[in-house]
Length: 239
Image 1 (cartoon, rainbow, N blue to C red):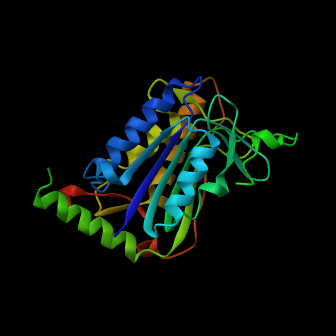
Image 2 (cartoon, one colour):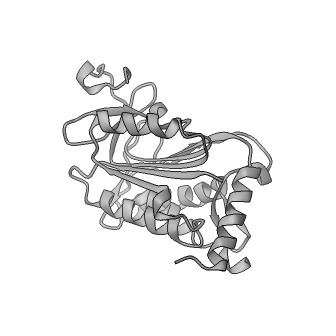
């Protein structure tokens, strides 16, 4: 299976973004995350609009079977989620990051407060050592991903109109999503179940530990059988 991970972070004013990127890399490379290779993970920290567009176009031309896409940083909402990608206030829309592969998980750990004023043209980009155990895990991970329905699963750290918390341990939602990805007993952890666990934990922690802050993660999934859902994790203890 051809797989690719694209991790994009805007580190401007958010110390947790760098932590998020490191945590996602560590998770993907772990047995739980599917034992990804370094060559399969692309990290873009505060990229220019031009560079990110070019990279997305390149990836779409390579016909990947599965893509895992993450954005961590500042965001807002206007008809769709808008992502501020660098300290020059350049933006990209969530739709621009989708359909890199026919099977894709997209995680948007950013605020989704509604903005009314139109974006200026300058801010819009609408015009544009491995042993047998690891190889066995990769093979089973690949087989399970390819058995899933083709789909674009989107995870949002908060609901429309809300703000996503940043902490010294990374984004609150990303922290809980990755924690779920390392703590399950079944052979695989579907993205639906991982998000549900992270949603409950994030909502609770935001209210209890951050002065009643309201943060309710949301998602977009197709309604398919469980065994046809995409997975975020594989249990290495079972193989």
